[in-house]
Every structure is written in structure tokens, then in C-alpha cells.
Image (tube, rainbow, N blue to C red; front, side):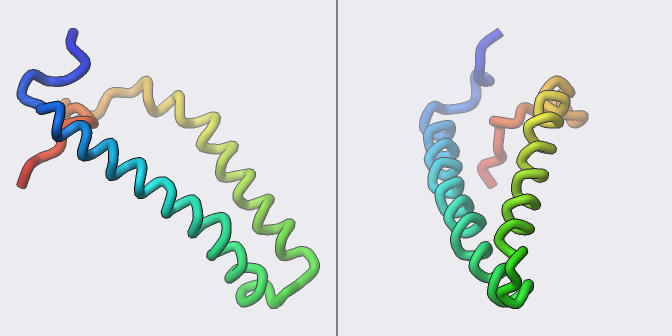
Length: 89
């Protein structure tokens, strides 16, 4: 079975790959730097426990993704469409 459907062009896969690459960097910076500073200073009011609370929340969420991710990837989409296939419209 081929990795891509025959009607999916390499150019389309390349474009989505570059979008994902660029978006991942932006999301990482916002979550680790910008929102962290906002949480500590505004939400928690510069409390001594604020940085630890933010770090613990991120650690728990990453652990959940780590352990539940493989369970999700074993389950095929219900619609029958491939996750790489996007509509051109």
C-alpha cells in the first residue's frame, strides 16, 4: 500500500509539511515563553509557586499526550479519509 493516495501531489505534501514545521515553532515559543510569563505575572500575581504550577501543568499535559497518543494513532479515522489528504477548496 503506497504511503500517499495517487491523487495527492508531492507539492501538496511539501506545503503542509512546511506549514506544520513553521506552526510548531510559533506554538512552542508562545506556550513556553510568552504565556508562561503571562501566567506567572498576571494570573498568579507573581506568587512564589507560579513558575512551578505552570511547569507542572505543562508536564502533566505532555505526559497525557505521551501516553494517549499511541492509542489514538492505532484507531483509524471514522470518516475513512486519510489524515494527510486535505481538500483543495
